[in-house]
Image (cartoon, rainbow, N blue to C red; front, side, top):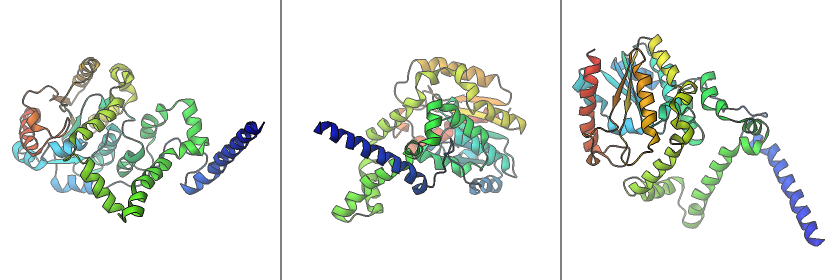
Length: 339
């Protein structure tokens, strides 16, 4: 009888705690109720990239993530090609951000480039939800307007089942889960260091960076990238024909064609083993791209010229690799630009 009473009290306390949190969390995190299915975007975009295109009179614009940032010297590329190029690397991004860069940056610039090169790997072009939530959401907000129905549909709502949609809108503990996790992460990361040794936020970030940074522990970084790639290698993502129409890829191609821009898709190399299913996926993707007008494909995924000595990890180039890969890239692009 006594144990039953304790359990009843526990249930009452738990229900009260969840109910109280349901009222408090929307106020604390400024989340409306019902919550929107996708977080709302701030109006306006980063203007420095538009300014960069206009000032450089760029005829070739490069889009990608950190692989582009660390793998290509766009000034050297301009010199080698004899064409003004301008790189817009968005580290940690996926196709949702690249679609926004094309639509809201390149197509809004006064100077319209003739070519846009998009750097990708494995299934990134057909996984619209990849790197769109949590710490990656600000990357989208940098390039999104406050009215992005296609972005919301492809990257957010179409990925949710009915239970997720209901929870997102009507259960604050679920809709605020990312904010709660971030607060807990910050508490565990910064509070003990501050109390025990007086190390502030900057001090803690520097210490964590020196321990887990790429230059100290490249194996840890490779593991992190492999964990992130689990989304890209999920069985359902390997079916190109099923995924392509629900991705940003056809919309990017359509935008480019409607605005007389040639799209160049550049598949980069990954060191290490990849799923066998990726071979069929890559073949279907290649056929799809080559059937499109004003669309080109440059494939470095099995290029023997790119060796281990180029790489600092499974994805990124070191300084030597950056110099050499820029030369290789220029050689491949030259034939396309001369067409």
